[in-house]
Image (cartoon, rainbow, N blue to C red):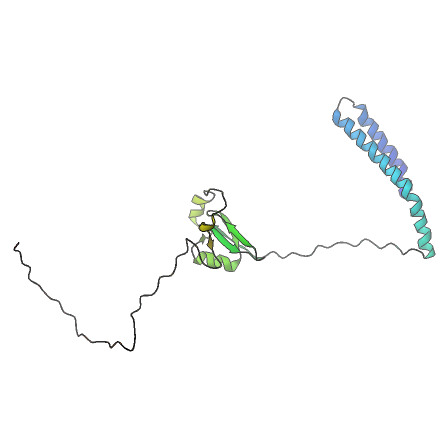
Length: 198
């Protein structure tokens, strides 16, 4: 089949090259003509070299000296499962670990995509806001565009950073066995006379 179609193809390709070459005042046509002639010559020479081997291979297969060529196997790419992400609006510079274990960073006032658990932490820490938050329309893209400085970053995983409020210690009364509670009775009000003399 290749040998039957090769000669007409070479003739048609060279005829087309000649037609392009006739438009000699256009540089592009001259380039196309040269490309077609080159292709035709390379295919013709490669076929002359390979054709005897093709015929010999048929004989070897028939005599059992060469295995039958295998059919081409269809490559099926593996299915890549993308991790679930939640899109939020970053109110501050952020740092977090993604699903692949890579440390990621984002400047403030940008949309970010976080793993669900990280997104829940970011919302609880008030480092991010939902996409529907009105501040997104006002602030989105208003940052400097530079990568955040290290001291600006709020690490969502460790819950540390300049914009994360530290919980205040509870002011519970000190209780100890050495202290005995004293009942001082009902409270009362004292009235003191004021002296107006200087």
